[in-house]
Structures are given as structure tokens and as C-alpha cells.
Length: 487
Image (cartoon, rainbow, N blue to C red; front, side, top):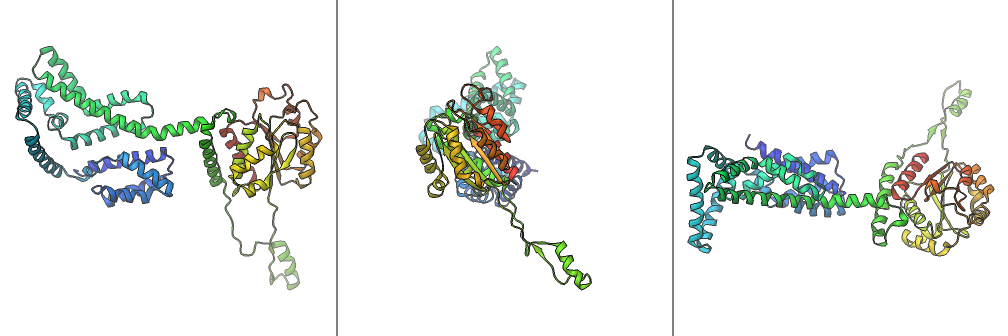
């Protein structure tokens, strides 16, 4: 039973550590958590470096995750990690040795007056407790013993157990620090100390000041402990909160300083969708058996199937055409749609991209020649300007209308504001009739569709699906649905 408590406490620490890794975007499955517990049980906790390397092998799967793991490990596990394996007798012996060393050091560096004062304070407490049963009971508690003996090892273990019992790993906001500090103090038994102090204050007892000093020491250590855990937990949670905020902010409202993080968010979303929709390839040696043809060839042999025939039908892969308005009002949205689509090249069918404002052109070659970010910059430079949907649809019909078939999905991103020009609705209807589906993504609110020079309500008759799309969350959801439909 003596070893069970440290083992359970350490398991709670490991679970909290895994939660911390997840908050820093390190993917850890339940099975990997159990593996980490097995690793810790096998390696033990006495050697910090060995435990760190073993847990890293079980929990970190990429160099980036390993870097995050080492950062979190060094901050989560303190220097008292090895104390989890020490027995009470070992800890007592170590403490006696530390105390002896400390006394010898104090004898060299502390004058006799300080030592005499300390001894007199402890003697005062002992004398006061002889006539006060409640005070004697308080001084006999493990908490007061740790404070009076300055037993930092035992006190640190008590702090860890109290933190685990109140769920300190769930702290998220700085406004929660006071709440968790009070709950930790209650879990450690500070309430008994508080009641005794209130009674001694009424009696004007000489034991009041020494007890107040121990109470202040305890509160300071608990506050520091909570502060450290808040900083540790908040780092990952605040990053998640910021990512969530950016993913729900209108792309046109994003400040320049956040664009690098938003680009990374797009790539993360694309990787997540790629993993979700990755095709499971079936391996066939000869294709599928063509039973009808095989039976017909067997008629000449009285039904004996000497010859088998196999189907090898190659289906045409679906094609995706992306038509993006890159005029000033919607250029930011087109940029992120193209970044999203080209980050999904392993999952999406063949993507052909077109950009337009006053005229339209195919830009697929730019993405083949340049990195995505550079290609998008060139697209905006070549095709930015005033918007003319009618002229741009005519250019699209000339370039790609004949290539559209029943396997083609057409995505149009734009606000449909045509500066009161001819919308060329007949071309949109031709695209609608030829394609498998036409999806229109409009960054404007639905309430603005059809107002002013917007032709959106007229274009709706030539779309299979139309949606408001002005932030990354909406874009991810729509691309997810598109991938589901293409499976």
C-alpha cells in the first residue's frame, strides 16, 4: 500500500501531462496514453532524463511534436519528480541528511541570534499547545509538520496531490487563479489553521504570530504553484482560443500580422480533411470478375468455365473547376479558397483554377510553377481590377465550357456584383446543365444578396448549391461537404 499512492499520483500527473500536450496540438490517442503509463512504470521516475526520453518515444511522432514535448516536459515536471519513487523511510533519511547539511551550513552562515530566535519560537508553540488541545491537534497535522520542519519535498508532494484532487489542470483564465488557490488551500487543510488563528486572535495568544507566519508561507507557495500551472496551461489554451477566433473572423478583416498564422490554419484544416477523406485503395490482381461474359463463353463447353473474363473499367476521375473573383472586394476570400484547394491536392480530383475581374484567365499553370503563396500573389496582380461577370463568363465559356461533363464540379467564389452589366445568365445555365454540380460561395451576407448591383438572386437559378462563406470555419465546412460528395 505504501507504493500505491505515489503510483496513482504519478498516473494522475501523466494524464494531466497528456492533456497539456493535446492543448499544444500534439495528437495523443488513448492507446498512446496507456503506452506512456507502461513506459513510466517500466522506467521508473528516479531518472528524469530516462523517463523524458521514454515518454517522448511513446507520445511524440514528428520532430515538431518532439520539440513541443520537450518544452512541455521541462515545464510540467519539476525537480521533485524522483520523489514519487521514494519510500517514506528513504525520504525521511534524505530529509535528515539535508537537514544536517543545512544546519552545518547555517552554523557557518547564520549568526547565533537567528538560531536562538527560531528555537524560541518553536518552544513557544510547544508550550502554548500544552494547555490548548485544539492547537496541539493542529500542530500534529502533516501540513503543520511540513511547514515547521521546512520539509519542501513533502510539501511539494502535498501541493501536487491537492492540485490533482481539485482539477487544477482545468484552469484556463487568469480570473480563475483566486478560485483555484482557495480550493487548493482547502484541500490541504488550511481551514483548520484559519479557524485556530481566529480563536487565538480573540485570546491574544503568543502563538498567534508564529502561526500567521506559517499561514502566509503556505498561501504564498500555493499562489506560486497555481500561477505556474496557469501559465503552463494557458499557453496552449490561449493559442487555441486565438486560432478559433481567427477561423471565425471575416477574412477581409484580418490584420496583416495574423496572415502567417491564418495560412498555417488553412494548412492544418487541409491536412485534417485530407486524413478524413483519404481514399482507401483496393488492390485487385485482375480486376473484377465479369460473370456474364464468363458464363456466355462457357456455353460452348457445356457450361464448364474454362475461361474467365475480368472487368477493367477505368472510371473518369471527377474534375474540379474553381472560378475566383479577385477584384478588390473579394480578393482576400479567393486567396484563401485557392490556398485551401491546393493544399488538398492529394485528396481532391484534378483542380483547374480560373481568376477574373474584368476578364478571366486560367491560372492552373502558376500553381504548377510556383509555391502556392507566390502563385496567389501573381494571380491577384494579373487579374485584379473592376468586376465584369458577363465578360468573364464569356471568357470561361471559350476556355473551358466544352471540358465540363457530368463528372465536373464547378466552384465559383464571388459577390456577384456586376456593376450593372450584362450577367450572361445563359452561360451560367449552360454550365449548370453540363456539370455534376455548381457551387457558389458568396462572402456577403445573405441579406445583401440581390441588393444594389448584386446579381446573386438571378444566378441562384443556375446553381445546385449557394452559401455565405466569409471565414475559415465556413470554408472548411463547405470543402468537407464537397469531399464527401466526391467520394
